[in-house]
Amino acid sequence: MRLAALFVAIRESPLPASRATELAEQCARLRTTLNAEGTVSPAAVVTLVGVVAEAVADVQSATVVRDGAASERATAAGAPAEAYVLTVTERDACLAVLSELLFTAVDTPTHE
Image (tube, rainbow, N blue to C red; front, side, top):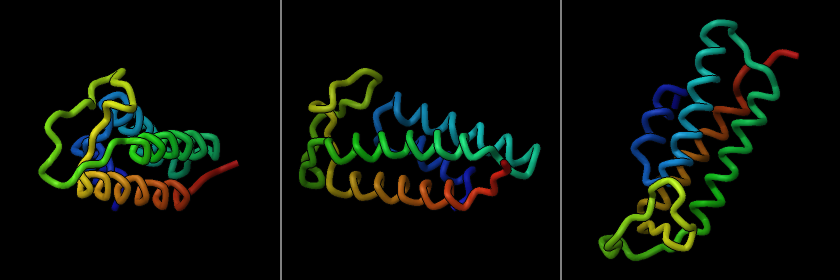
C-alpha cells in the first residue's frame, strides 16, 4: 500500500479518533515532504514509527469481543483504554494496516 492508501485505511479503521488523526497527520506530513523533496528526514520516519507503535499498543490493550458482539464503541478522543472495544476482525484489520504502515515507513527514502 502507498501512503495515500494507508491514509484512507487509517481513517476508516476503528482506531481511537485521536490516534487515527495523529497517524493520518504524520502520513500527510511524510507524503508532502516526499512529493516535494523525494526524501524525508530519518527523524520524521522515527516519529511515525513511534506513533504506529503507540497505536499498536492501543489495539493490543483493547477489549476484544467476538465478531458481532461489540455493543458500543469508545473510539472518541480521550476514551479510556479499558473502554476501547474491538471485534476480532476489527483488531486484525487494525494490526494489518499498522503493520503495513510500519513496512512503508522503513522503506521510505531518507536523507541525512
